[in-house]
Image (tube, rainbow, N blue to C red; front, top):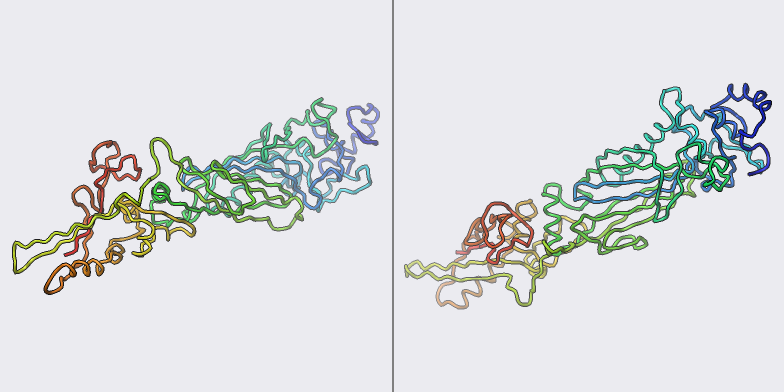
Length: 470
């Protein structure tokens, strides 16, 4: 304990009789030696305030925070946020801690400055049940403020609609380190509890947790909002695509903020930007330390992205195609000479997959919907997925297919007049495939058409798209 007036419970009855009328008249907006303020409100005990203990001398707030974002799918994220509060800005509490609320001077003679000094954790804790003139308690004001900050941050950084709820908690883990928390005002000083070793108004921290459900905007995952976003995202990943998803993180003045983003169960992280963050297959993390910012400075922000690929599992492996040996396109030429005066040549093209080189040559770009994505090949199911979600239309395949090269090849084998190529037709159904072919989600050996599916577990060998050229 420091020299001077210390814990009030050691005062004599005479001292109480002399000081009590003045304290009752002035609290909670009293200019009184700081431990007395806590005593008058339900006989609490607070540690002495000392500016040297404040790790954010330019801000009224000092918070160590952890934000864990769990991406359930492309449309929803669950957030768990932990705040270990050592100091909080006074304005949030309304008139409970008014302008005349004064904790100084400290033992070094430094005066309390209401413009830069917030309310230390010890004092917030002892006034949690105190109501302002609006009838709202300090605890409710604090929780409401935390919820509002989270909603604003998520709406700004994720383009999201958010619902959040906050509560005080007894433990906190920030950036992998446990932090001492206490919400009981009778256990926060070393005179009240043997577990408290510090005479510090900012310790132990007052901790709260916010849980939020975030409904993501389509742009957050770099996919066209007109598509079936979840299905498209998973389908592209299964076919070997790598897609980058970007977010904007922010940290207010006085906060030491730590962020962790966990991808969906079916995805794993390949890399992160900026590279200073931690990148593991299971999660990515970054930190933004804003403790040196001035009280009214703008939030620090960081634009981050994580590049993800499919996480194969036993039931749904990623597409694996050996492009050196497995056929991608079959071309069958049928010459019908039953009417010698009107012979017909039919070319049937069965597409099983198109590799990246062929897609580039044909001008097919399935990942143009993403600012930063790559895909090694697209299967017949992938083409259906793209078509049914508005990413491509029949005209793209019709215009992309190299009909002129095909005609040149056929003419080189025939004598007489060159063949006349009619318009390309995309067959909705044909044999064991077609553009509108659908899978039975319960099928294991057959291709009954009940429901569309993208998982390769249910692939059947004879699936293709048929194009006829007459």
